[in-house]
Image: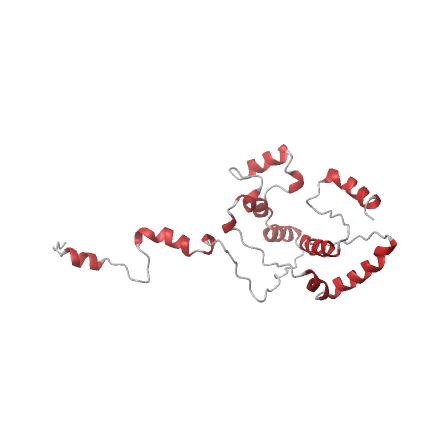
Length: 203
């Protein structure tokens, strides 16, 4: 082993950090400040083209169920979104959730995380007039509703996607039509009364 007496200036210059790298004591804070999660105006990259997932066909039922569980990720979705809204008033469901995910809130990570750590939805609702005429289907529906409204008809519009219901709600508010929205967040015990109100009160 060789021991050498180096001047302090030489020693400090030997361990100087290059300009392109952060100081050793500030790596953690630098990584966080440069991360997209630390920015208030968080925007996630959306590719211009998205390829559909590869569909695997197999005669083995257990393999198909395994793939379904892998793709749907029920546990991860439950941790992210929490207990479903219709079950949040149930103590049994909340206790089961706490047992499955100790330390997690029944509302899930989505509702309990800070706003700057949640990706902003890329969906933007356009101007109502443009919304109608940019979509041929909505333009046709607009014409039909204008014909059916004077006759006091009731119209049922069904969609599998809540985002589509959001767009329809914007349209109905713009046209000042009376409507009743029933979706997955509606409590089961209230649905019968809601349907009765729609059949009797909305004209």
